Image 1 (cartoon, rainbow, N blue to C red):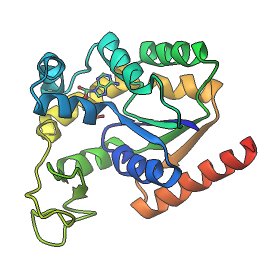
Image 2 (image 1 turned 90 degrees about the vertical axis):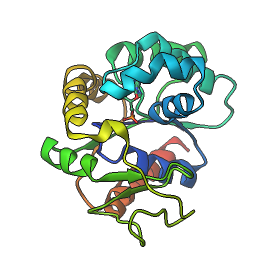
Image 3 (image 1 turned 180 degrees about the vertical axis):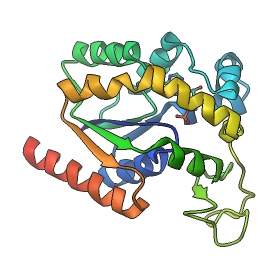
Image 4 (image 1 turned 90 degrees about the horizontal axis):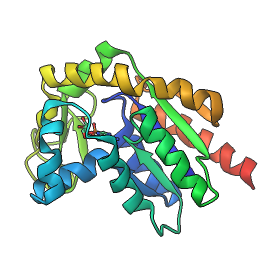
Amino acid sequence: MRIVLLGCPGAGKGTQSKILAERYGLEHVATGDLFRAEIAAKSPLGLKVENYLKSGTLVPDATVVDLVASKLDGLTRGFLLDGFPRTLEQAQSLDKYLSKNKAGIDLVLYLNMNEKEVMRRLTSRRSCPKCGELYNVISRPPQAEGKCDKCGADLVQRPDDSETTVKKRLMVYDDLTRPLVAYYRSQSDFHEVDGAQPVETVTEQLTSIVDSNRGAAR
Ligand code: AMP
């Protein structure tokens, strides 16, 4: 199964992708996480993309497409793309890449959420720098304040989750990524889910869509 998970920053893509990838044995390709790992490792790619992430703007298409292709090359199981594609050019490059291998996207899942809720969620988001677990001080607080439930490390706020950078990221989303909703709605097996619902409800709805898609493919 090849799945694209679409949605604005803060709509819950990271949380839901991790759950779905584990449940269905899919490779989870999250471009934002990959870039953050490169930045932390101070690799040449990390140094190249650092300022884009800091300012909430998009990394150039060619760089992202190369990175994703390197993750998909030779992959023998299905995958779930989280945070990619983010522009029409990236979506078209992905289509070309897959059609070379006589494949395509099976399912596009769109997590929809209004801007006010996104702002509230993103500025209250926290993550564990050690194991990657995600929290939210309002909707999913850790058991002990500021500490990861899984590994006990001190939780951090992503530098690009400050109010100013979130505003910038939402503008970028509206301009460059939102057009992908129409693109995929018109040509793919496209499903929209309300991302503002409780995490468990969103998961239930997403898994029921994936299950019926798998059933239909059999
Ligand atoms: P995310 O964790 O998905 O919110 O991504 C964090 C940041 O990584 C974004 O604000 C961009 O700077 C960069 N990024 C992640 N995915 C992409 C992509 N597909 N295209 C361009 N930039 C990206």
